[in-house]
Image (cartoon, rainbow, N blue to C red):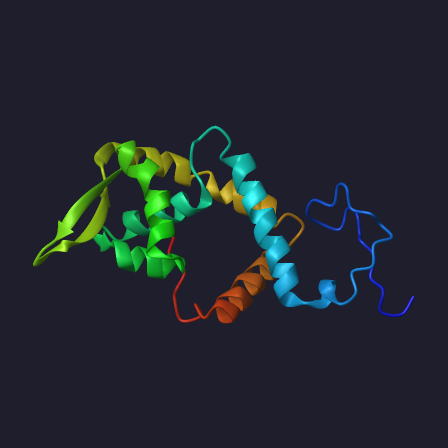
Length: 168
């Protein structure tokens, strides 16, 4: 069979609808390709776990960053999320409209915008935050604890976030 790689239904992730005779060439050996599929699976699991909660993965990231860094600026949130400020603005609109997030001006520079959770927003987020463990467990189902830790370590190195400590 040479370099031909076949789809592996049941080998993790959502393989429904994949032909088992499809030739993937080198794709399933490319880390970038596999990361893309892992990312998409993570999005799918998040959507399942947070169904009906009116929260996207980007909005969860915003809320986590603001909760942990009250008064964080728009630019710092965008940088931490590795996204364009305009993408962040789109993610923020429903959070500010619902009253979960409050915009505040930065002392000494009224042009800069910063964020904090409203008291009601903090309560709601803390209730929602408890679901993230469920999403992680579903995503990483089948991996032992040491494999999960190794995967997180490797992904931090690949993403250039190796020096950033994991805070719970």
